[in-house]
Amino acid sequence: MPAHTPTWDEIHQLAARLGLAAKAAGVQLSSAESCTGGLIAGAITDIAGSSAWFDEAFVTYANAAKMRRLGVSEDNLTEFGAVSEPVVVQMAEGARQQAGADLAVATSGIAGPDGGSPDKPVGTVWMAWASAKECESRCFHFTGDRQAVRLQAVFAALTGLLEKIPVDRG
Image (cartoon, rainbow, N blue to C red; front, side, top):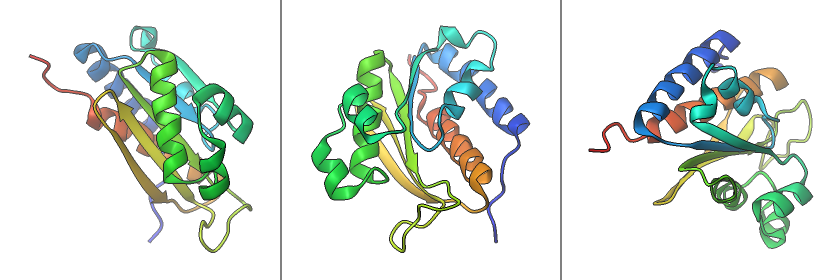
């Protein structure tokens, strides 16, 4: 069964919830985006007052940008490819460090309609969420056209950020 593709309104509602949680926890967020091309940052900055909890984002679509802006190693890109766990982990950690954020999310994937392979079909998206304590990564396999894959990725990225914000710092 195909996954539900969220509407922009559903993404906006999720981003608003994320903002309330981040502000309440005093957490600063950042993003490093490849396949989502800035849609995560766009969803976040659509929320009034987001500058209180979101300072900086990185759209690193090209491999050279991933290396230059986020410190992704050429060895990882060569050995594993841009759509891989080692690369998104380095992207998330790089974004968190470069932005001075408490928590960062990174995405790299194949939105389509082409570019897939038997090992990494269209809809494959790796994500990582990095904090000072840990970095968690996950591979998703989204369905639908390019826009559907990207919207599902944005929703998953924001959901992951929300889940990682500490509820009680006391």
